[in-house]
Image 1 (cartoon, rainbow, N blue to C red):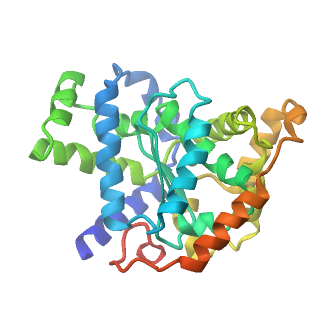
Image 2 (cartoon, protein in one colour):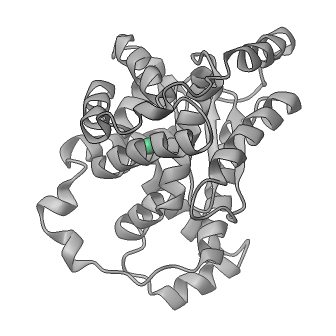
Image 3 (cartoon, helix red, strand yellow):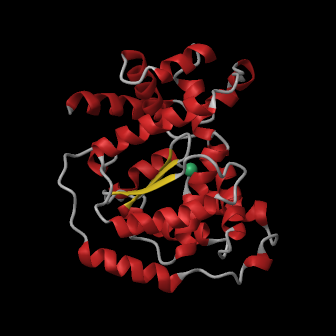
Length: 290
Ligand SMILES: [Zn+2]
């Protein structure tokens, strides 16, 4: 779709011109204080964004794999202060390497990223990072600040309830746009720190996420499968460095916890044997759009 292409290319240009932390630089963070959006709106916004992503890039057609990823994700989510969000986890059918969290607990990981993983602690680590964004409302705050700053809380609540209306579509479209731009770097580092703690609480060796970051940093940054990830996240080396500085030796006591290698590899082997790619059009989450 050329319209979408132009719009998303436009977004990319804005991203390149305006540093991710420009709000903080210009002191805008202090000026814009919002009353919290209701949990109901948070969940509906998340549903709307997830539906849009899945409309463009459907789930991998493998119920056993999806169930497995949901089991791991829900167990990690239970370790958080928001265990009762309607947590949903899904693997989307694209080679691009990335993972997303919408507000309200919809977490998606691409098949490209899943195929890079070697054990369950790595999967748990990635899901824990995304879960942290949802729990701490990072995405919700970004959307509110970037796209919906002029709309009052009451009005937003009303818009979210008018499902199918023009207002509702506007809400979801603005949210999806803000969502595609990525988060503040400080939110990314915070999710990395919270993620290792959640993985440890869930009984995994806590640094699964760190081993994935090491693997990502070894890939040529020009690899187009990584473009979207690198556009929306800080450099993996920098993330590793920040994470290790913050955590130090504090989680060393958990280093002997299991990584779940055998179980993960058995499930992935079975998945690869029965995998049939989904027939679909290219989407904004595919590599060549950028
Ligand atoms: Zn993130």
